[in-house]
Structures are given as structure tokens and as C-alpha cells.
Amino acid sequence: MLSKTQERLLKNVQKPARYTGGELNSVIKDKDAVKLRYAFCFPDSYEIGMSHLGMKILYSLINARADAWCERVFAPWPDMESEMRKAGVPLYALESGDDLRKFDMIGFTLQYELSYSNVLNMLDLAGLPLRSRDRTELTPIVVAGGPCVCNPEPLADFIDLFQLGEGEEATNELLDLLIECKEKGATKAEFLRAAAQIEGVYVPAFYDVTYHDDGTIAAVTPKEGAPARVTKRIISDLNAVYYPENFVVPFIEIVHDRAVAEVFRGCIRGCRFCQAGFIYRPVREKSANTVNRQAQCLCDTTGYDEVSLCSLSTSDYSQVEQLIPQMLEWAIPQRVNVALPSLRVDNFSDELMEELKKVRRSGLTFAPEAGSQRLRDAINKNVTEEEVLRTCAQAFRGGWTAVKLYFMMGLPTETLDDIAAIAQLAQKVVNAFYQNPDKPKGKGVTVSISVASFVPKPFTPFQWEPQATMESLAEKQKVLLENVHTRKIQVSYHQPQTSFLEGVFARGDRRLCDVLEKAWSLGCKFDGWDEHFRFDSWMEAFHACGIDPGFYANRRRDFSEILPWDHLDYGIRRAFLEEENRKAHQSVTTPNCREKCAACGAAKLNGGRCDAK
Image 1 (cartoon, one colour):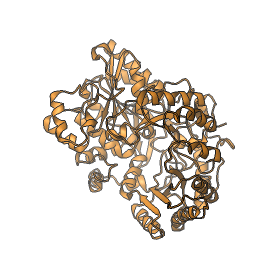
Image 2 (cartoon, one colour):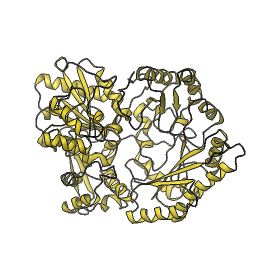
Image 3 (cartoon, helix red, strand yellow):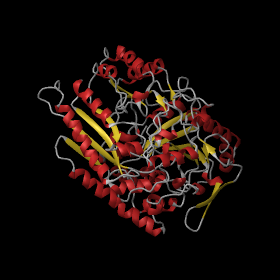
Image 4 (cartoon, one colour):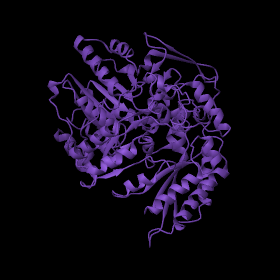
């Protein structure tokens, strides 16, 4: 419930519905009847955060407890932030309108490195000290989870503890511990010492980092009884794990405005550039019956007319051809569209296409990732040009007229010929449409190619590789455009400056904390948005702190170097990653996990079980 002061701000901002709360299925509780209040913070706009499945799961999970109340907090857009600061209104949660200082636990999800400045900005808007050492009381405890915490060091000075891996079980254990500590009057230090013993919990203050003269890490030394290595948490049985029966339905359109049914976690493919494909291992699947039941329930409770099947590679789900007909039995009569993102060109079957044609049709998206076969082999994409063209032709025969292809540039071993090959492959897809005798009459084809700048990430075979320089990426973008000769091919690509900064923080250490705070003080926030990105201010911050960002982004690491995340265990054997790196430089592929287990090591986290086997 917003106060009159909070309500008065809304008349001066765009999209006031971002800040009102009160949506269908939002949870209101008596704050005096709960033992713990949790503020789930998403460090980006409402439209981005409300699309995030992890927030939906943990919001409902915590609110399923009688003793806890979880509320949502999003980064206010600059127009709202300006109004809040002028009126002295601190950052508040949508359900109660209470400011964050009244909460026991403040949880951030870290999905993207360029959201880090928003984390600091949200803490400051809440009236809380930025540095964890300056927040001396037991509450609020500031925690963070999400994929970026596989290297949490650039935020180590600001976050009290990080949750590694999947949060459904560890979150409840942390809440139980904090309630216990509150009731017995424990100190913050006592809570953190106990929390550090929970599997998957990393307390950065309990680790000292020393450096060599050349700036590389000499040692990471635990103290206060913290474990030498912190192992990520995983959920073993996805059929039994908690999943929401409803989602909060926003008043305004969000990025992914639909129901979401998760089908499996992990990935069988082993693409060497893909962090998610490694940090979410081992593969664990839900049964088709479970997915179908959860999808139908969500559509019933939200009114959504579209449900998306969520995974890293939906067509790799072993029960997909059993699941889709089950879902269509109720989806077609209820006029619900079933969306299958993350399709693979090498297993897009005629049967799957026929099922998809029964529901509302949208464009198809595939990810060849590289233009030439040599480079696809180097990154272990295990997709051939013939498969790409055959699948696109298959889709065109089925009536599709729009295809989106995802690529990357700046990949290890890449040449300018590989860049030209992106445009050449797109042209072949265009040609495949016009060579189709059954193409829709009177319609043309649109082939969209989206080209991201490759960023080396922790826990991948490319974690040791140098990132391409901004100058090199700009040259490659120019070469790509010069090789596109038809308006039927639409090209989009990332700005090299944002990719450079992402690369710095992806593999940075805790010395970047000072840079981050300095950049924030210079006005940096919403760095993932082109209209707000201030590259010059970031470079000023690096200079002021005496740190060369190229040390983190553009430098090749030796296999013997201690990496900032080496004391964290995501299940992947370092020797396996090293071997995959060597194979990349030889353009040698590794079979996917269903063809042959590569012994990556992740199955040890699940008692040796991996559903890919």
C-alpha cells in the first residue's frame, strides 16, 4: 500500500504502473504476523525483472511459508529516481510500500554484469551503506544469487553473502537460520559464520586475497572456519521441487509477457563459449506429465494465452514429442499458444513442426553462432551448414517466412573470412526460401541476423582466452555489413564498449569494487541500456583507481594462473575445461552428452546421476 507521498510521485513519471504494486496474484500479508521479511530486488527495470523466472519461483516459494513475506523491488527508471530523491522517498517494495531498511533480508539476482551499478544505486536509494562492513546490525542481510555469482568478486565488498547455484532449498535454510538468529539476539558476524557452513553459501569477508607483483592472484585464504571451496547447490528431483501455481500478472506489457513452464535444467551440448551450458550442469529433466500440469495450471491462474517452454535447448528435451501433443489437447481449445524457444537446427523434426503449426505461428529462431564450419567446430557447436539450410527450408515449406539467426563475433581463432561467412550463410538461407516451390504466394522472406560480441566467461573452456579488442570488433562489424547485399537480411549487433565492460567484470577480481563504486558516484547506472551507458565515466573511474581494464578483458591467462573464482566449485573439472580449450584451437569437436559422456565432473553434485546419460 503506497503512502500519499509515494503516490504523488507517480504523476510525474512515465509508466507509473511500474511502481504501484497491486497486480493480480501479488501477495499481501500481515507484516506483524510474520517472523521475517524478504525484499527480492531485481537490479533493472520492472519490465525486465517481471519476465525473470527465478524471481517468480523464489517469490512464491518464500510466500508459501507462513512465517515469511517476500516482496518485489525493481530499479526505478531515472525519471522515478529523480522524483524519489527530490522528495526524500527511499526505495520501497511494491506490496507494502515499506522502504528496504524495514526488511530482514535483501536479495539481489545477478543476471548480467552491467547491472552491478544498479545494485549500488538501489542500496543507496534505500538509505543503506554500500559496503557490507558498514552495515553492522544483524538485519538487513544483503544476499545475491544468479548466474553472475559464479564470479562474485567484483561485488565482494558490497554483498554479505552469495548463494551459488539453485536457490530453492538454500533460501529456506538461510531464512530458517536468520529467524533463529533474530530470536536469540545473535550478531551479524555470528549469523554469517553459521551461514558459511550451509552448502552453496559464500561469505566473501571470510576470504583473504593476496596478489603477485604482476597483478595476478597469489592465494585465496579462508578464515573464520569457512570452507576452502564453496560448492554450488543443485536440485536433484525437478518433479518434486517447488514450482509456482501462479505468477504475478503485470498491469503493463513486459518483455516476456506469458506463462513459463520449465522443462529441464542443464544442457547436453558443451558449446565452449556458453557459460550457462556448464554452470547449470548436470542435466535434470522434468517428466512430460509434470510440465504439462504446471503449464496448464499457470494459464488457468493467470489468464495468459501463451506459454513458453523454458530450458537452454528445448528441442533437446527427451520427452518433447510426447509433451507437445499433451499440451495441445488443452491449449488449442483454450486458444493458448505454445512457444518453443531455444530450438536446435539439428533436431527440428517434421513431427515437431507439424505440432507447432497447430497453434499461433511466430518467427523461428536458431543459433548457428559462427558462419564457417571450421569456427563452429572450434566452439563445439556441432551444427553443419547443411543442417542449418535443411531446417530453414523445412520451416519455409511449413509456411514460415521469418527466421532469426544468432551469431557471435570475436570468438577464439576467428578470422575476417569467418565474419564474411556469416553474411554468406544468411544469403543461402534467403536463397533457400525462394528455391522452395511451396513458398507462400505474395510473401517475401525476412532473415534477421543478430551478432553478439563474444565475452569469455568463468567456468567455460574459453575462460583463459583474451577478449577481442573494441577496435577489432568494430572492424569486424564493418566487414559483416560490407558482405550483406540484400535488404531481406537485417543485421543487428552489440556495441563493442558494452561488451568490453561486461568482459572486465565477468573475469574481474575484488579490486574492481573500488572502480564500481567510483563509476556509480560519477553517475553510472542502467549500463545495459544504450541511452544510459556512460563509457567515458567508466574509463574515468578505472583511471582514478589506477586499474587497467584491459588486464581483465584482453589478456590471455596461463593454465597455471589462479583465477578469481577458483575457490568456487560449479562441478566442472578444471582439467576437462583445459582439454576443451586445447581442442578448440585444433577445431576438434566433442560429442554431445547423449552421444558420449565427456566426464566433465558435474554429475558428482547429483550423486553421480545425470539425465543426459
